[in-house]
Image (cartoon, rainbow, N blue to C red; front, top):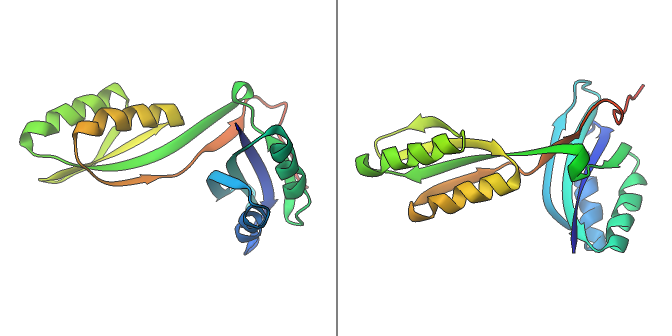
Length: 166
């Protein structure tokens, strides 16, 4: 099984995300992560999908998605030519003794403490999936109360691969 990151530029219309995820569901393709947000041009939405399968399945996914009416552009974001990021918000139970230990771990990862209460901290961490997994592993000795992750967002490096839509 290989992993592939696909970036779509689609019309910013209601139901577009549902139609794309429905195609994956109908065909039995796996979505490991999906993120969507409007672009600098409000007519279009950028969707980043992380999927997996063998070479034939990944090729089929690209062909099937490209056929959808709302899809204006599709490209694979290869790791060596792209930048990927994910956001994680982690609420950790703390007491006065553990607080400094968690803050020290957060500092090492350049994470931000965005909320402090008497019995918990909320930490914001941005990075690639490996960085977030490593951070969560270090928090293994602490009680994670809640965790929210955005999924992968990505862009190709440089200006050579930019898509301009009329």
